[in-house]
Length: 118
Image (tube, rainbow, N blue to C red; front, side, top):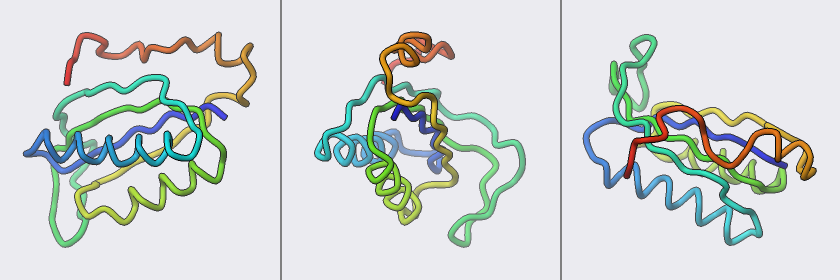
């Protein structure tokens, strides 16, 4: 299945964002998944103030990861991110059923903010 993960990490350290993305990516790759795209959006304001782990946040560091994996791996990624205290929010969306036809319609790049580099 093709999934897209949108993650918001507490702002302040790009190294933390990279480490979280690396952890999720390693989990996917070790279990036979494929990472299609990884994009750094940088720090943006959150839609509303958010409390997480006894801290209040108004900004977050966003990144997007598009990957192919089984539903079991996707559940493992969600559990791992949910336990990480550096995460503010994350959401995973299923984009396709894994067939070549459905994936080819989406492409491999994420069309938003393509110029941003890690």
